[in-house]
Length: 376
Image (cartoon, rainbow, N blue to C red; front, side, top):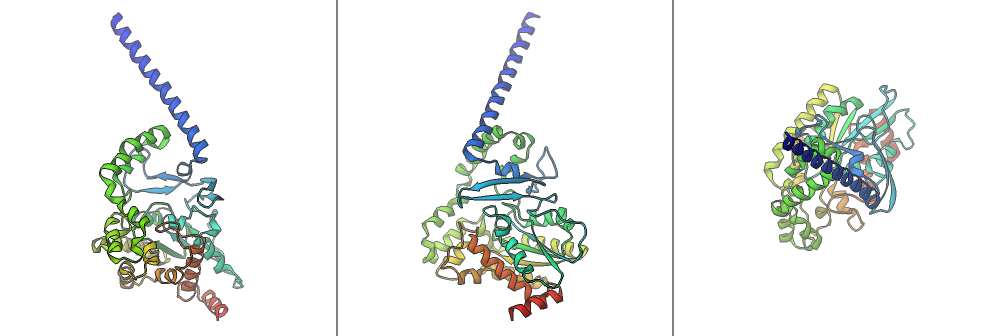
């Protein structure tokens, strides 16, 4: 009996000690994050798969409804304000009434969400300003930013189905990037971030990243990021051979757009979006962001855009290829990295979208006519 009591005491002592150590470690990690990083951006703004708290169900990332965050972005050294509405969109709350409103919902990834910028600086916000500038028709344009960082077309269509239709859009624009065929959670060990303990403990999340995610990248996934070194060397600007070598290295990212097999998935997801459009009475258009190497290389390769244009034409989806207009301005600083546009890049994209929409049948006839008269 005494031996059993002693064993119980020892077990209790060990458990208590581990609990105290965990509390100290968790408190220390949270303090470190606050002091060193200044903000817990991902924890405040993003949440993993909303369909389940305890298990992973392969639906990817979403914005956290009602999230707010203010921070100084380290690259721009500017204060950025982030506000997410109840639907998970980077926009103000939307009224259930739509009197004299034309709502355009823009789906996309981190390029669209634009966390380097305040909302009105991102191309989505700039487009809203352009559409409402000098507007004397009584029609107000709302251009709603539904972008979420690190997602693809699968998640974008799910977001449209889950909450996009609740915004009652008249028009939905899909901001397509060349890695959008990638399934949710591009690195499979990222799935673990959805489990309850990893959601709520920064210390355990840090351990998981160090033990599993970083080890996976080092030992197995190293080839997935090999293109970054080639990209940084910039030999591809003048050398076609290096350019196509980098595409092969980036096969699990943007390089997938040069692989014919990846487009079957894109076609399937676009068909799903079209069914939603028909059911809920809105129109769809698609615009394509290039990878920066397509813009900056001395030679021209637009294979992904040609394929995507054909897919859209077969489905009567209006399509805008942003590669030509960005190449026309390639003497300016357009990108921070391989895909994220600078403020200048965002402005060029917004203006291209504005011209595209005003010359299309997608806007209400009276409004499109007014824009065309102004441009004339």
